[in-house]
Amino acid sequence: MVTPTLLVQQGANPSADFFVRPYLRNMNAAVTEAHLHNPPPLSAPFAEVVFVRYLTPAWCKWVEQHRSHIGQLVFFMDDDLFDLRAHTGLPLRYRYKLWKMALRYKGWLQRMQAELWVSTPWLAEKYASWSPVVLQPQSPYVRSTPQKTLFYHGSASHGAEFEWLYPVFEQVLEQDASLSVELIGSQAVRKQFAALPRVHVLHPMNWPAYQALLARPGRTIGLAPLLNNHFNAARAPTKFFDITQAGAVGIYADHPVYRSLVRHEHNGLLLPMEQQAWVNAILRLSANEQARQAMWEQARNSSLPLLRGGSGWGLF
Picture (cartoon, rainbow, N blue to C red):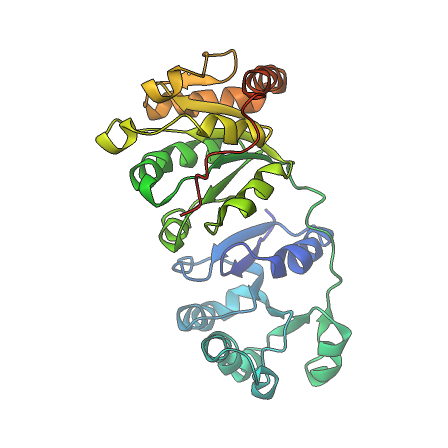
């Protein structure tokens, strides 16, 4: 049985993806991953334990308890984390993070006989007494899955719709690695969806900026959920034009607002506000480029006389 390498990092990050993962892959290492802020494993022999940039007291304690079962202890850095002078001019909060999670562990790492991996010859020369290993950057995008953008451009008046969509996004992102989500929302929306992978939250913007955003290519499926309440009853179906202008096919709430424009499976989908129905429809559309293209063309044809503007959703 191959003894694994334990990679410890503060969530997915470019430092590991550009440097550490390719190096370990080239070494044919069997990698097990752990999050820096999760509890360490109860026990295990490891050929290597590699910390990416940061440490915590809990992990230091774990290393001390299991050092005899760790073949090689490694710390990787791609910034000058161990020199307080190099942090001059950085934001105070970030300087404190560097001290708390990296700088104060320099002596401890040396006592634990850790190997230092660095990203540049400059860092290797500065810390030459540690005999660092310089890792060469490699593209993390070679193995990336091409992405299709699923988007919802809501506004501050769509808080209930954002909440309703969360489990929908959770399921489709888990089941379809080719989907990413684009939202327009506040800092609260950003926090709300922070736990989900491949979610990008754009700041609200003015109308000309939003029109330019829609004119940029790359969007695949647009969502227009609409919960049945008094405020939504007064809305117009302008979301249809926004989604079509973005070059995407739309999934719309089966609501009087959209029934006047959307013909189900002709120029979009009309669905009841049932989350599993939306999950299933998103996954089907994602897998069927031909159906998406046909419905988008019908949507474009039916909206051409009016498709000179948009709704302004996502502006406020």
